[in-house]
Image 1 (cartoon, rainbow, N blue to C red):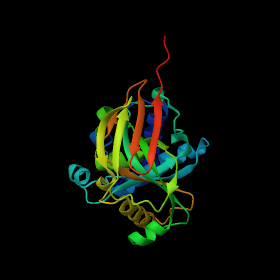
Image 2 (image 1 turned 45 degrees about the vertical axis):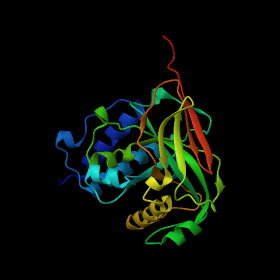
Image 3 (image 1 turned 180 degrees about the vertical axis):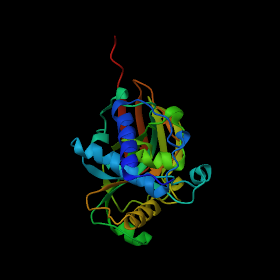
Length: 264
């Protein structure tokens, strides 16, 4: 679809407003808006830029569609990505404000902390050597579209549904993270059980992909950036009051509590 920059800017304001006000909007594709992948990322960038104008700053990036099953489900053959901002950060052991979300879900992940920049085509060894530390993490996803339904371009425009994240204690990067058991718990009971191997067979492959995508976008993953490698299990819907924890073999835990709504 041949859309003007002004039209994409207006759509970015709508998507940002949906996130800011926690009010769902119609899927862009259902309105006959047929974005290209490039336009979807342009819309994402403009939408997130509105957050920066309100004082947020970028902390890193999240990777999406990092399982073969999800790629097949969405009919794609590559991953997607979006920025992590300071406004999305939830302190480990802290509280997630449920009222700031529409229909949030949570996924267990592996996080990387970079000690040097990455960009372009790299191999697994180069990705590993650029990592300062690794940690268990939780990502809150919350589509700004009705019924959590979207096309590929819709979800890219919506910052890949990324809405919040928690990172546990950082561990030395010499831990083998290729096949770690991961248990997602609600109030101490397991709701999802998986392995870090579900992330492209090895989470470091997600970092390789992130570097490639940064290069293709003419940017880089800067030193000090956090990279969320992707989900190790299916997402679980959140509810007020629940305590959420991921327990990761060799890495420990990341956790937060979802706030209870204020009584009338």
